[in-house]
Amino acid sequence: QASPDLVVVGSGFFGLTVAERVATQLDKRVLVIDRRSHIGGNAYSEPEPETGIEVHVYGAHLFHTSNERVWQYVNQFTEFTNYQHRVFSIYQDKTYSLPINLATICQYFGKSFSPEQARALVAEQSGEIDTAEAANLEEKAISLIGRPLYEAFIRGYTKKQWQTDPTDLPAAVIARLPVRYTFDNRYFNDTYEGLPKDGYTAWLTRMADHPNIEVRLDTDYFDVRDELPSDVPTVFTGPIDKYFGYEAGELGWRTLDFETEVLPVGDFQGTSVMNYADEDVPFTRIHEFRHFHPERDYPTDKTVVVREYSRFAQTGDEPYYPINTAEDRAKLERYRELAAKEAAEKRVLFGGRLGTYKYLDMHMAIGSALTMYENRIRPFFAEGGSLD
Ligand code: FAD
Ligand code: NA
Image 1 (cartoon, rainbow, N blue to C red):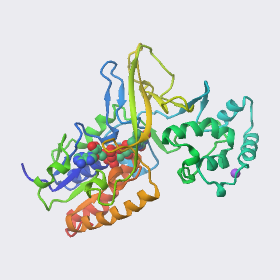
Image 2 (tube, rainbow, N blue to C red):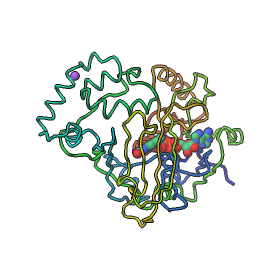
Image 3 (cartoon, rainbow, N blue to C red):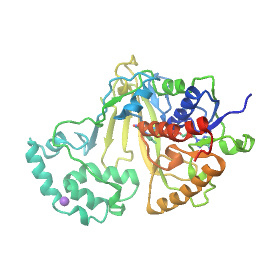
């Protein structure tokens, strides 16, 4: 087997975008390595065996973007349905519309409000605390939306997400807490939104389907890197702290646990995502995957639900959301310096969610990979020189 021109570690959206561009635009050979037994990183999905209902294995993935370049790019590999995401919340046995909007306010206070009346109410209730003075997450939230709405929709949910009382969380965890003074409850307001018609895995598989791309699964980069040609350029999308042997310490992540159940009913909750805002309900939300694809021919007597639990990641857990404490940011600074050196000396570039310790939506991971390709990888192959 000829040796590759580029090694890509990680077959998530970042790695596959780089691999696809290099293979198809530059006609170079790319070796993609993934430690998991499937491609696609966290966007991977598969049919639940008993029902055939597509389940997003690492948590529900909604595609949305306003980035024209990304939208053009992804449409080469898949068509999208016209799915529009909406989320509801149960609190004290009542169901509400989210994100907090005019319907939520009318439901919660049990009467009709005009947009102007709702604005006045929230202004009055949030007047209790000045946002600039807020000492913790609870105070910040109250300063933005007032105590009643905070207690119903933010307190319990946030406490479960972080396993920490909101009075012990930094105010900076929430930047904004927008209230919509209309009945618009579309979750995303991007130009484009939808789900891949034949699923995420079909989309991801098509990206990798090229004679110049070899995908090696069940292979940890750290186990094989000594066997790879030492001068081959590499794009690394695994955890940056692990790459450097945790030399500056471990970066903090939150992880999620998923509990999947097949129920003998055609419809469990009537919608794809129901948040559970009460503190004493242990999970944060329930996904019912059939509702992501109402256009599909799914069984009418069975459904798949997934309860989601949130906690701090321990060594060995899947890292999902960067915690980003001041300590984490200091460590990341150090890793960035090491990464710059590694790019200059060993032709290794770091990208994606784990490689940059950044929460990236799919469209951001793809956009950032396209930029890395354009600015660094293509010039390197076209003009020679260094990769950094
Ligand atoms: P990943 O998908 O994580 O891929 C990294 C890959 O690297 C993995 O396959 C991993 O196995 C591999 N790897 C790591 N270390 C090694 C190693 N040592 N050797 C070999 N391989 C290795 N985005 C949206 O746009 N909409 C959503 O609704 C949405 N929901 C999300 C929900 C959750 C719970 C999470 C965690 C993310 C969500 N995202 C969502 C973000 C989306 O998952 C990311 O944008 C996407 O996964 C980023 O791709 P990536 O390639 O950077 O990383
Ligand atoms: Na205020």
